[in-house]
Length: 363
Image (tube, rainbow, N blue to C red):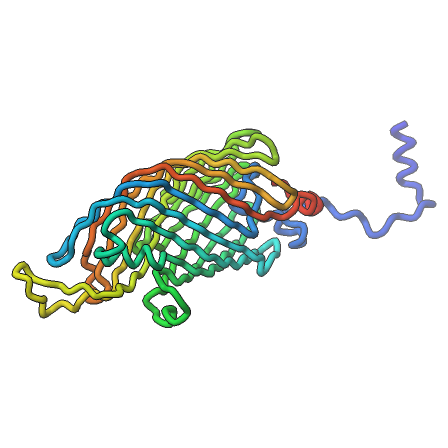
């Protein structure tokens, strides 16, 4: 049988087939771009990507202590009856190619306080905050550059207007402008493991600072995984099903606001006389840093709509006011919020499951 097979294969009466079959491509760099596999920071089991996010968070009553750091400014002890945070964020793919992805994001955030005590009548800082709220309008660009099947590069730049402005007139000043950025170079070791090293430059810890960052995304099995951008956040993940995911971990949130005082605060010496070398305070820089220990549940409601429910404990590290009038960044008020529980609800829109399955993408 083997001889007969050889004879038939060498039969000159049968014309050869042209062109000969191409050898299989074993090196992905030799394949067309549309067929190559590119690395990215995501791993199997992670939650769906978010296009539009609406979130509301509330913290119940807690105590606040504010200690003056300079002569002429009073201290304050009281309570915060209400601390609420509303955020609306949207992300739009501006460029989506296998070797380059660009996403543009827009967001609006507002933080509100309701003080119980003398703050609304004779404590200038908290009176401003309570009447006007603290707002942030931001835009950002995220660039993911897969280099090959192992290496990837991720960068983000963000600009925002952050403070207690009330109208478009207030926004004419550059004082409210803020800038942050981050960059990570990473390795995709397998569909279940991706990690990277880089930096973050921003207000995560209240003041503008540069610090290292370690990205670590790993799925250990069908249920458990971890998602981290240390030190800003670390989260353990438990996949109940494709439409239900639990998370537990911590996040560090930092905010930096400019507060324009209605009534200027005069700097005085111990004898009560105005300081000649210090201008009255008209603007304060408010630095807020908090750590949240949280549990979170995400559930698919429709093929494109998910619900996120979150609860935990918030530890406030700082809520301090600094001098902006004299450009010396001297601390004026040192405040501490008592720790308190918090809860939040979130709705977010994702690409429909059928669309992802048609494209061959697994969540």
